Length: 323
Image 1 (cartoon, rainbow, N blue to C red):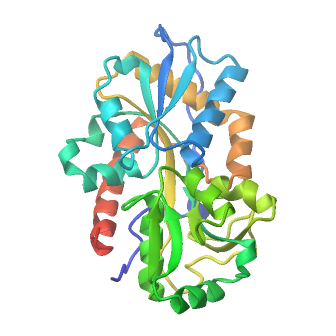
Image 2 (image 1 turned 45 degrees about the vertical axis):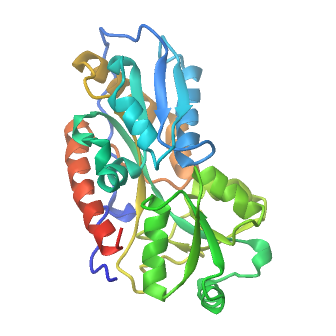
């Protein structure tokens, strides 16, 4: 398998410019009941952490007259969440926190009948890189040592991830092909569970977003070996990127909010304003920096164009990886 070009983000972190959302404007429509804030992943992962952080900011500043109610629906690589939101009985009160399975799951599970272009653009809050982690007690401190260890184990090296076709599995598949690695991949319900099992040494390595591994890294349990970003991450300046090693590849997870199909224009404008204010808040900007996310704001038209591009990019990448 060879991937000869970058097929995911056409903007690397170094080139991403945070476009400021439009100023807050008064909205005539307001929620009449609690807002179904569905999360397309299990508890503890990056999407879950972001959703609950957003909820806390909205509550702290009393930004909504009805609460955001987070609900994890990560089953079937996010299929459970997509089906739930696509069939929402009240589209004006149903929004979804997405990651790249928003693109890959409908491609890999066409029987779902999900057309993401029917969903309602709300906000692109940023993009999240991936890092290869091992446990400190493994004794591995460099990527070269990691490659040597995996190759020496003849298929017995165990990595955890969130399932076939999911974001981390795409990264692991590319790395495995590039370095002739035979890895035993174990699927989990979410990135949080993956990180916890690496901390408990039930698995030997992971490809987690920085936010998912940060607590374990700060506790001295995790060692970062390789970043799948365009440039080195400021929080991990000594960690090389796979691009530095000669591979034209990087991969980022979108951190976005979308509305249910059939959402009214008035409700969409309300949520776009709400998440624009959250994006501009000091708390969210500090979160982007502390959790190694890159800012990437888009308006509704830009988001729809981005979705179309990412579907085709992921279709090409999945085919190249044999998915």
